[in-house]
Image (cartoon, rainbow, N blue to C red):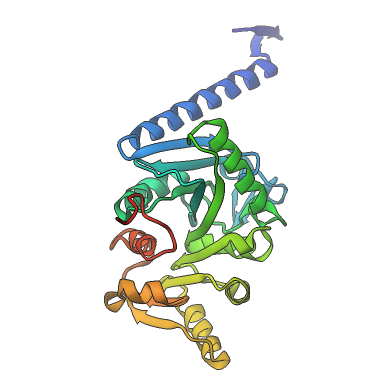
Length: 314
């Protein structure tokens, strides 16, 4: 350790402190990523890396974020550029890679989302031939801001970096292009999805949007995307999650417009109905934090989606 003697006491060089701190953070992050990747190895290949185009850091959160008199500092909550990419075992190379990109809600992380909602396990169980992507949203913070993915063409840059990463890592043997894209979000994840379909630069490539108790606002952006691209929108909502009023208001608007949609109780929803309807509203008796995994809803939406199967039909 390098020290200076000042006025009868020793002081560590500030530069050395910063260097040691940076090394410690880098080592810790690498270890955490390696551990997470090892955890999912039996199911497939998990890549945990950092993207330049990831939501954060972002200038709008350079000074952190204040919520209910508490400040969430940028260093702890808005500096993590982690992106997790999961390729299930048996992934069938077809020359195109379909993507399911999930955005977590408030007070969560990439690792917490993967483990808490069993996203990789549900993808494997669905049998669908797709790559799961989970970017870090605000890290353990009560905030719906989507960072760089709310910027014009931000999503286009993100997908381009994702494709480059897969090619550099030599994940696939064949050359490929990006195929269908499904955007999935729980709770506060709605905001970044609405920005992506509004100005992300690839709205025509987004085939489906899934809102897991997440329709708090931005109804007009979701409807504009649906009208323009005719993709499937699934909105599952609860009584106590704060989304019921907006969900019912959206259905009333569709009625006035004469736009057909499916409104169904979760217990009565059939896979065939989910496949054949473009606008789906599912009311559930589950609490807010259970709507993604409790009854394997994520897997059900995957099974009824536009995605192809890992094993092609005979």
